[in-house]
Length: 303
Image 1 (cartoon, helix red, strand yellow):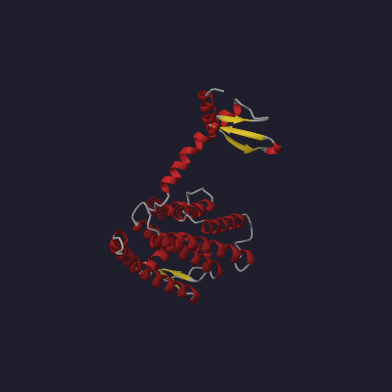
Image 2 (cartoon, rainbow, N blue to C red; image 1 turned 90 degrees about the vertical axis):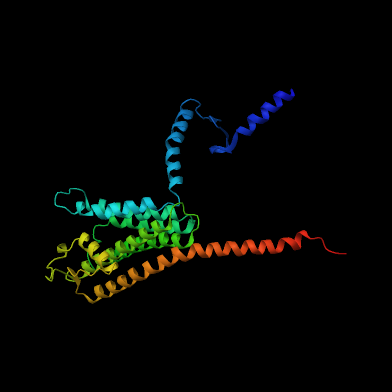
């Protein structure tokens, strides 16, 4: 074999990827198709190329979204703004659609801002458990075991997503947009999480809250949108007074939410102000230490 032919063969073999196929056969994958026993050369290559072309934009968009929290903040704002549409009498959409639209935003945010494997695995387990529990018919029976499992899983999902998003703001230094977007998203998720807690309290005690000083006679008198409204009123310590907690546990949860709302804003502002200064100071100290060690390394030792 000539030297030119040998070089061409080496280049060709470098472009091939040899893998172990099923049934003990050796299947060779080329960049333009599949070569091996039983591998179709015409239709298989075309389908594989089409699938790669279809998946590539999705993967590119997902990579572009990594470390970005502003789209999540905007999506959550829109859901909070448009949620009364799901509770209007003219709405014919199923109730589970509104629940999973709300859940999709924190789940996506946690996956985008959290790159570690184990937190993602825990998130997938929570989502899978909620999907299974949504198919159970009797989880709405207050006090039943399925009810407590479903309620705990829903609160855990939103709380865990809020924790992962807030953690990314305080820990990660490689976010692609300003950390304040993630901080606002985490703040809103805290309000949604407490609204779910109030929903659980209402299912246990339908008279736990009063609307405009009138005690409701049924659980349906306070929809989730009103509890969502009350949660953010309590979280921001606005205190309008049109919805008041009557149940002792509801009052305790309201106190905890009000304290978290005040402390979260203070800690977030402190983190956004102090963290960059600490980072610059650490970099300056590292640079000074490196400059101090450089003369001792470059200067030759005296005999």
